[in-house]
Length: 604
Ligand code: ADP
Ligand code: TZD
Image (cartoon, rainbow, N blue to C red):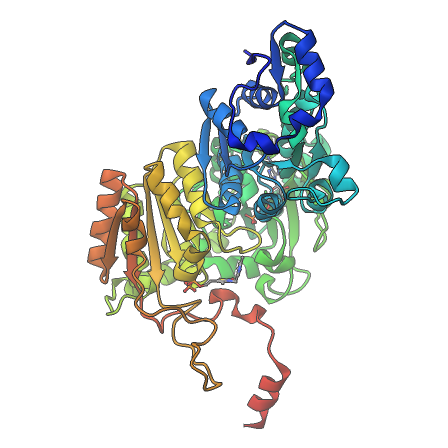
């Protein structure tokens, strides 16, 4: 039901002085001349979101959206208020990925908008649906650059960084604006959408019945897109002819929520599969067909690779080079909703364009009891390598060095997650990320959230809050100490909402490690070094949460189990050997080398 207001604003605050409604005579005229029930921009925005089953807003209040946050809360929406907009934006993005509904981030104008924009761009890069709604200053003043409060042409700035951007100028268009934003975020390849709401809009009034009638409930915002039958046949033929087939599952496959069919496809075909980071758990990592522990081998040796919601970007070495073995030995099948993704890096022999649910269902329909599973030579070779690598890893995990290293600490977390497969793991850092991805097995779909396509630091607490709020499940955030610093202040948010989040900070005293030396001779420490022996656990205690300093895997296990049992906000400062990390983790080769250094090296 749409909300109705009196002719006066429903909430009066000191911010009202700066609100533009007093400048707009026509709004008053409408209100004064029509004694009938009125609604306004504030209420129409809330009603439009609620009508579309959006029940949560992640944001940060201030002019001109403070009242919007209050009214949304009063109207039954969950309003999660953050300490910095980037984290609210990241939360919205993660909520979008987890729920398949666009996550909403609400910010103030210019600086708040810009703070949220990184998250919007990241969501778009990750193909997560989210809507950044920002209040903005007066169009007349902004466009003449007359220096309004927080003046900025936000729509123009947002446009190149997201999938779509819209501005609503009139209350009667709010329904259309919200509907377009939802459809743009969800349809086709999901992504970030910007919705610009100038301050003046919120106080505009209109007849309540007309307002209600102006709202749109979006019908089928992510319509199924069936693949063409001939493209299905082409893909099946290629798969059938393969000697060394491989299925590669990406986070698009996790997002698609076609879990049962994806599992059926893997199991019915008997094809080994490799999950990308956020596709881990689509099938349990201990599944016999998982080729994770033989990753390099299968990528180099496979002859037909079927990509399911995964792009051949830098994370997959662009589908070429040493990672992929001998040149011209591979053929690709690619299932994707975005036709222009095809051939983006290498030739795709069998594109399958459609939504993953429909594409996988179509493939399944073509796989009958006569399907010939991959040759034992291939699956056997993979199994051998897996066994070898897994026993190597088990031996490393069994070591108990002092101080802890990444392996011993993650070995402890691995066992806890095994016992709580419903817990959601959030993961960022460099070494902390790379090692956690391979050591901590996932058992259920959409339980792992991480730095994604950009490899961005700062998603930690925003993603953790969204995971806890949208699922109610416990969250374990495995964080490098540098990574944690980007969003660390949100531990207050975690405590304020009493969320079941346990943050584990892998504290090795710096970015990558804590041992760099400043060679200049000045008193400053090296750029990658932090305060030694910092106690991040005290940050959580400062806001009433539980802080634990853990120096052994046993202490870490105990604290983590306690956090899961009590569901209380907890931060474990896991003390890690400061010499343990490598520069940039596994992507150290992406660091450009100075020519001077090369010359130096070659002359010695
Ligand atoms: P990863 O990083 O895990 O390899 P990417 O983010 O690179 O995954 O790829 C995800 C791909 O999934 C994108 O190309 C996107 O267009 C696609 N995608 C997302 N949702 C769907 C869907 N429902 N159906 C089909 N493709 C999808
Ligand atoms: N800024 C942003 C927004 N994203 C980034 N990826 C970086 C900077 C560069 N960067 C990485 O790629 S990883 C990382 C930074 C700063 C932190 C690594 O240190 P850590 O993890 O303490 O988080 P490890 O486990 O000690 O390596």
